[in-house]
Amino acid sequence: MRPKNLEKEEAIRSIALQIISDEGLENLSMQKLAKAANISPRTIYIKYENKEDLLVKLFIEEVLGTYEKAVLENFNPEMNFSDGMKKLWLNTFNFLKNNKPAFSLIQYGKSSPLLNKAFQEKNIQQGSFFSPIHTFLKNHVKAGLIPDLPHDVHRALLFSPIQDLVAEYFDHLNREQQIITEEVILTCCEIVIKGITNQKHNG
Amino acid sequence: MRPKNLEKEEAIRSIALQIISDEGLENLSMQKLAKAANISPRTIYIKYENKEDLLVKLFIEEVLGTYEKAVLENFNPEMNFSDGMKKLWLNTFNFLKNNKPAFSLIQYGKSSPLLNKAFQEKNIQQGSFFSPIHTFLKNHVKAGLIPDLPHDVHRALLFSPIQDLVAEYFDHLNREQQIITEEVILTCCEIVIKGITNQKHNG
DNA sequence: TTCAAAAGTAAACAAACGTTTACTTACTTT
DNA sequence: AAAGTAAGTAAACGTTTGTTTACTTTTGAA
Image (tube, rainbow over the protein chains, first blue to last red):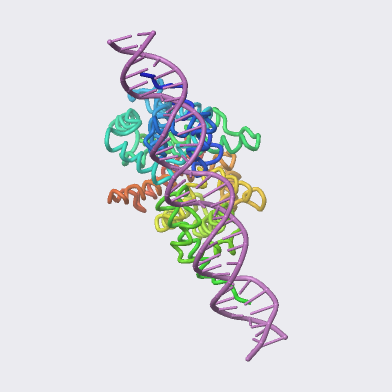
């Protein structure tokens, strides 16, 4: 039998991300996608059940999968807190700033009920994304370095600023400014570390 | 001549927000909106030029307008840093947790190119939203209490965690949990304050 | 009380939507 | 080399889209 053309599958995914990033999720249609990828609409349905299936797989597999891998590169849960945080922040920054389409869909994941629901189901069903970070934080809670807060609260405190900074990086790009640099990222990371770290020997 | 029925205008806006919040921006159509509001599609076009105009006005006027007012209530730029921050965080939390549709569209503002562009144009054309916060931060930079960073960077460090915490509040609601309370918000606010505050007399 | 005029409605427009049908192509297996 | 089968295409399906046309209703002012 004739084998699947993996190039076409990759084209579907990358062009779908491109359209979402440039025109918005609300402006992605199957026919527009097929035309942009130079294939028949039917071909998309060989690889995906329907539009929702395409979007969910794009989000969970293509985007969150590679995102997680990039963020956790050269990171391990046994690192000391400051080094670990800086590694995670720089990995996040360097991956996302070169992958605007991925960043765009991640943002939609916080907006769209469909993607948000898919993310939570995935997270519950088969162990959460970014579980090494979970372990990392637990270690430092146990060591008394950071306060014992729910994991979601840790995440909001420690990682929401870096995601906002990436959004600002792209906004500034549009206006041909360059304010958000690796140096700024590291400064911000240190501020966040200072905030969360217990000051056992002060006062 | 016959006057506009303001109730219908309000119905259009609130029902549009409802649909966006429940089904997503990508599932809002003019016909669905008209049917849900018990009016003719044509009526929407009396009040708005087209769908984009409706979305932009919904976002900028209805949502960001009321959001700004709520966040700045009983706040003024002359407050001391800690009190001001806590006021802003609690105002944000208490407004958004009771206004999921507003929160949803604010999230879409970070995803959708249309809304994101509209926000930036509005911000440039006629003075930024939340300018009292701008003044507030400038004051405390001048006093040497917090480091002199670009305003966007301040915003990412000081306010992105509270928005993430609101998102988590809604996620937990769906699972009938109640982790994000005013008390948690204040704890987190203090952590953020501690991080950004210059320690002039230590070390 | 009449009446211009905007508000509002019901129905329809072409275009685009997600998806499928009927068919052809390309490749593996025998 | 022939057969068999999934991949892939072109064209079309019925529906829904954003928007408009043609008409009716409601109102404040004359």
